[in-house]
Length: 432
Image 1 (tube, rainbow, N blue to C red):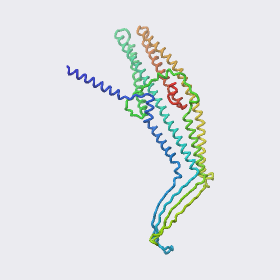
Image 2: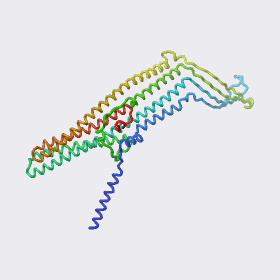
Image 3: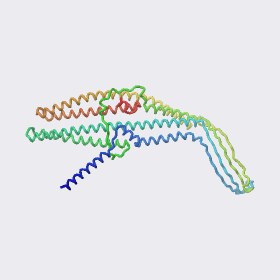
Image 4: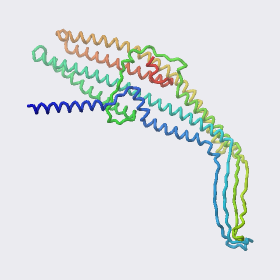
């Protein structure tokens, strides 16, 4: 007997150990720590960083077209018929070393363009990071909503189960008819697949969330957060000093870069190119057993000016026209983006106002539905109401609670979209 007790105790301790290990293995994420994890592990952010590194390298080496060209060489030559060429030697040897530099005024514009392209790359990287943060925060809110939705379904299912079991006992006692029992059982069974579907959707969305964070989908994580704080938010407003739309800033920098590219293209097409080269070339023959070496190298300075670029059908003219088109297109994009951003900010403010109003109505509906359900349950227990009325009251309570959760989620997403469009740091408006 004692041995059996020891075995049971050991089994209980083993189970407790594994339960504690499972709990400790869970990783808890707040919305801010989830964003931090995405910054560290998200693949798209890593790719954007790689692109930025390339632009930084191009910026540092933008001057390399003026880098001198240097070469060295040597050779030995044998004359096939020295008499026919009037030469007095059979072999000749030579060495060669040269250095040359080309310079165009367009290089200065190219260096400036490379700087601007890097600055545009920094803005594009910041916007990519911001888009990931937006996706993480929206997904976090979505998962909190799904968790609460599942909890509501579980409570509703438990209520339906209790009603079914109560009706079954009353039927056995001869107080109600069999049809009431069957109706309660159908209501109970119908709720199960809905709950299971919600659980499957949650697990799929959780896996997508883990990929967004750059962690293994097999890792067990827990979300630390709630939508309740969104239910008590005061009025949301922003002033013009807070608005700094990233999309507008990026287009402005891209337009500046395109204008610099246009200037560089014109200078390359119409501007002069200066060349400076120097060559050292010692030369000797076997006439004096290669004892006398003479330098036949030279120093040259030159300038060239392209003429064909002035022809309107030339490739250079086409390149300039394309560069102008790019500038014009970005000007149009910038003008349109300013209008779009202004419209989006106004639209999101309207959505926020509408959601806050809906939340107040939903909260009142939940209170009324809760009271209605309690009265219906009390009346049903006294036999004053039928089962259908009780189920109807239960369904309305469930719908009211879900509607409140849905509006809280909609409010959170609208605030995130407003912060994103206006260029406000995420979490600023919910912290007011």
